Image 1: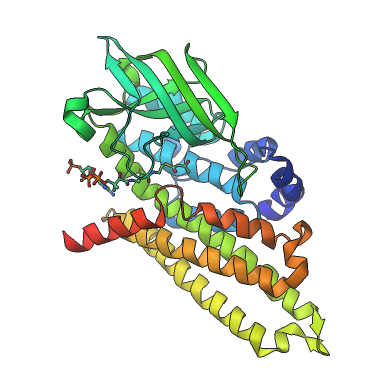
Image 2 (image 1 turned 90 degrees about the vertical axis):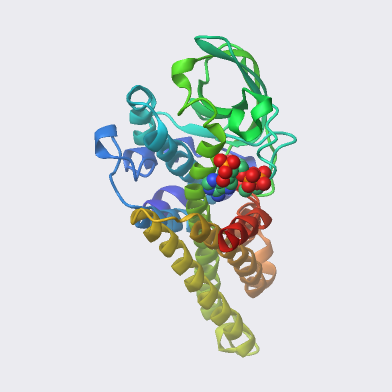
Amino acid sequence: DFARTELLPGVIERDEKQIFPAEQVRKMGELGFLGMMVDPKYNGGGMDTISYVLAMEEISKIDASASVVMSVNNSLVCWGLEKFGTEQQKEKYLKRLATGEIIGAFCLSEPEAGSDATSQRTTAVDKGDHYLLNGTKNWITNGNSASVYIVMAQTDPDKKHKGINALIVEKDMEGFTVGPKENKLGIRGSDTHSLMFSDVKVPKENRIGEDGFGFTFAMNTLNGGRIGIASQALGIASGAYELALEYSKQRKAFGVEIAKHQAIQFKLADMATQIEAARMLCLKSAWLKDQKQDFSEAGAKAKLYASQVAMDTTVEAVQIHGGYGYVKEYHVERLMRDAKITQIYEGTSEIQKIVIARSLLK
Ligand code: CAA
């Protein structure tokens, strides 16, 4: 209901003009969508991951630019802070992040460290009571709209990935600059920026976990994040499918509704089957996480498959709409553009296959 009444109006304009859905995100916070799984004692919704998957699918059917804000805040920021943060960090940051009073960003990717995430060039030099942070982060979701940033940085290069720390950086810390907004193919309403850190003093109490825990923090957090992005891909696919189904029952060609032609029926049958399979993978990974079982392989499978289904389904939804599908008013071209990012962020499809294969072979 929220997606239809609050996100649908203006979604085409926000996409076209790259407008961040600030007002809509504020309302999502009020409804509890930004800290769904956080314990109520830290102002969260206290819900399970299954509920999160269901909500992510519905929001993503209409506006994937809004759902990526939701996904990053819930999975990569709130979850990581709640699981690994200190009590003081939870009081100071998590309580406000969970209500959406402020939103957060997760900063791992760099100009030369995307898939190869252990190759962090950003440095956090230990200066006793603080770290001195220098470097650049790329493709950061919520780059400008966030107030709190979890930044991975190398403290001890000799220790390779075991020398990386995860630091909580506030936007107004001296030496921190937000770069220009990226002009993207899809999810154009979300604000993606590069970030520059020049001698930013980050207090030691802002480190998450023990010294050198940063890479493990990032990997564990991304395991859960992948369930969120899989659900986003699922929503993009099911949104496109629902539009194609309705259109095919109205549009006539060769004397009948196009849904009466087998060429269209075959497409609808494939779409519905693949979407249901993707939904089951999303729900299974969420269920494993809720049961406190290992969910990294299941989450990677869900993301790998659901993102492929999002691509295939949205391309077919445009095809079913014919020429109408190629113009903005019918929404499916936007969903097709939005689908592509789900095969890239929080680990490309190739990275998901590596995660799955390593789990199978271990
Ligand atoms: N879960 C938990 N731990 C993991 C893990 C996982 N899925 N994958 C690796 N690790 C651990 C390993 O166990 C190892 O730890 P130990 O040395 O203590 O045993 C450590 O991480 C290093 O692992 P590897 O030696 O396997 O490292 P690698 O360099 O060969 O490969 C990788 C690691 C899996 C490829 C990893 O770099 C990776 O996941 N890359 C993709 C990064 C990514 O997803 N980036 C997304 C950016 S965030 C984003 O997109 C957010 C947004 O804006 C929407």
